[in-house]
Image 1 (cartoon, rainbow, N blue to C red):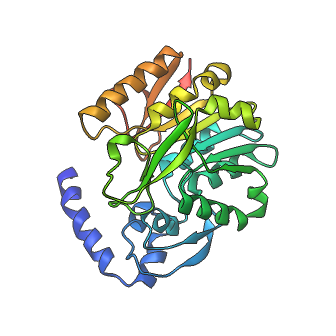
Image 2 (image 1 turned 30 degrees about the vertical axis):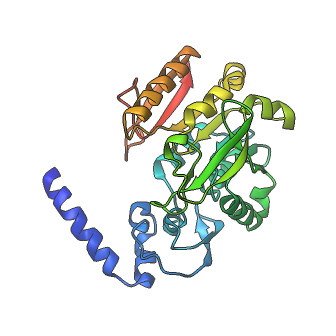
Image 3 (image 1 turned 90 degrees about the vertical axis):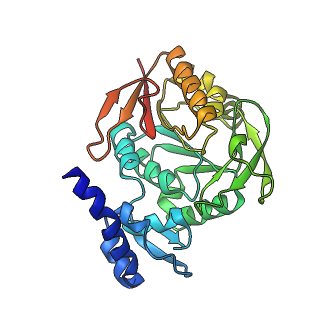
Length: 286
């Protein structure tokens, strides 16, 4: 049966891609995996059904925004937000991009909560602000910061991906100097939190395409003081990134965190240690 599914998937994908754009969009509602394969037509519009009732701008040529046409973004991520983020919490979104997760966090923390969203990329930051403007009640709960987070204060090189539109990285192993890139300011979360008055921290999501270790090292004092739940993307494409993932595992355990992998579809959490990781991990203080 599993082999049959593997054979059928590319056929269904090809059939879906052949459908007109106007048919693909309604068929993808509730199916983020399908929405990724919607034809990337050159048009821009606003939908009002993201996460049920949230307005967002969508450019179908952008791989990230195209997924929003499903009304969702990443079911696993949204499930973890609903599970761990409560009314009145303070949540931090590192690598906020256009706001897909920041908006979900804003809904979860409620009117008495706070979301701190960090996005250094100029286009992504502008889109994040525009999406918040479309949702005034949620905007009241979100404070945006156009800076990168890292282990030390300084600067990072920020570069949009030439492979997946709508994504970018500040991880040196991903930077190709032959392609467009800019320098952005960077701060350790601990120092930045003190400077701008971020008090309690209950939940931190980190997705920066390779620089997650540096973000968490720069947040060490915050993790030691507040013990927030962590939702972290972990990349291990090659030997250098595998070595960094192993260091991340060691770092979290040294602070008293337990690490859990996230099972797809069921959203079940299973305690684990590297290299038996899922693409996104949850870490909870013991």
